[in-house]
Image 1 (cartoon, rainbow, N blue to C red):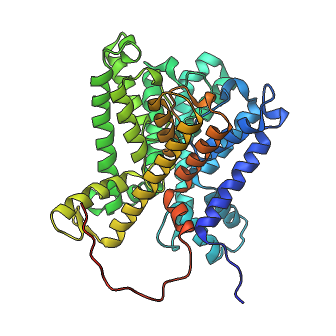
Image 2: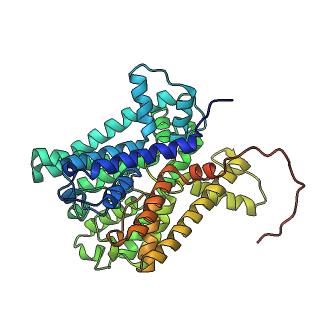
Image 3: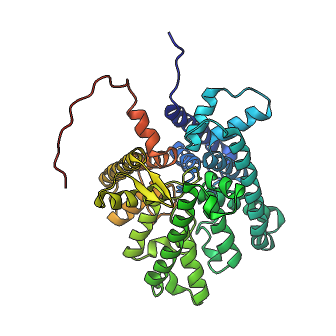
Length: 438
């Protein structure tokens, strides 16, 4: 009999579940909280931190002590970059052998197709992360240290830099970053951190290796082009739809501040979770656009969620290719075959089923505005973390549903799909049939 092995998708799920459990037990301790919280509150917060979502039922700044905030920050860092990444790095630093099984788990965590070169990739990722978070903290210190003093201001700078780079959306203020809606440092540094974190490790490493567009990998080109489009168009659209809304941009006097707020909200909606205006005050059209951005999400191998930018692009190109009677997708001088197209379709279907099922169940257990519940569901799936104010009103069943959706959004719908579809290989094939579609 062969040795029992845990499939990589199941190992990934168990690792993240174990981290959530550990975080829950730490956050419920008296040393972690300013006042006692329930196990449900601790579990929800830990899940939100590990899945780098940012939805909260307890005020992070007021409800948790410095120790509790530090626990949340560690959970965010481990969950954002992948706990397997840190585990492999520690083994490497201790000089312990890293077997093929560990490399397979790491490959699953980083969403790679090969086990080769993963250790070099991990080291490059961590160096880049440390540099970005340190620079971000120093720049945010320009704002926070003069206002809150050195010790507290420095901690706030570090906390928000780590939270931003990991696209977590946890803030130490009850209104997120709304106090600094017109501050250029906050409105440039924080989005820069979560955009870089959301591009993905693969793209960052490719950018470090070469500086020429023609030499970039196809994935890098798709991510850079897609990210640019998903930043520019939503920014302009947000400004156009909210410019005179007294509940959002209309309350801001300066046109420059309104543009900064439009830029911040358009960028944060894809995965970051911070906000500088009242999300509940947005118009229905802007809210719907925000939900679309949440579902699209960030980049593969990034700290963000959603179906991913490249998946969305390939889905659109696949649709175009079908109507042009082509069996492959051609983009930037490269071709994507049926295997990639089927993977995109599978990911999209699993994501849609997850969203629809969760939305239906939430509507059964939570009596609220349909748009608010739908927004909450999309925010959880995209691991975004912005809310229209219903998170604290969820009952136990509602919290469990949102926690499950956050978890699926972080480990990836495909990991769940592969786990459910595991079984013996088929040994028979059936004759081709015909089904009339459309």
